[in-house]
Image (cartoon, rainbow, N blue to C red; front, side, top):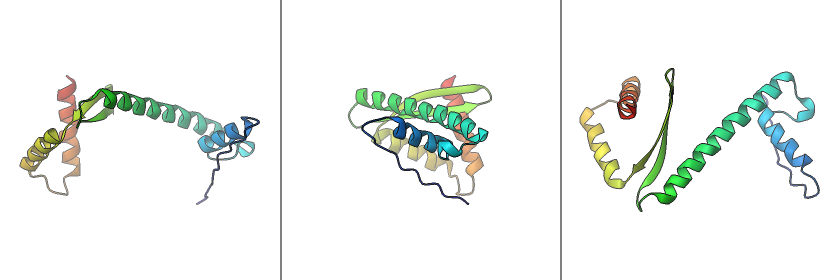
Length: 128
């Protein structure tokens, strides 16, 4: 196992050192030691990271307009049928109601696959 420590540069005279640090972070190696797979990995990680940042921006914007006491939560489902995104606004009252319904199901600790199936079916029904 190799450890790779990245220290982001903050050179006030040039952006080169900072950009090289970002490239090292994305490619998991210093740019001067990159191999073709580092370029591919850096591109993939940049796309993934930018997508995550967009999702955080959505949640932040939704939280700004949410009612006091509610929590904006982005639900994202990706399946062979495509992608589905929906913002849910969770209040303490809704969380308690959800917890009560979950308790009624009496799911034991070993039913992870069943919990996932229930969640997937609920999301599918919700998105229809």
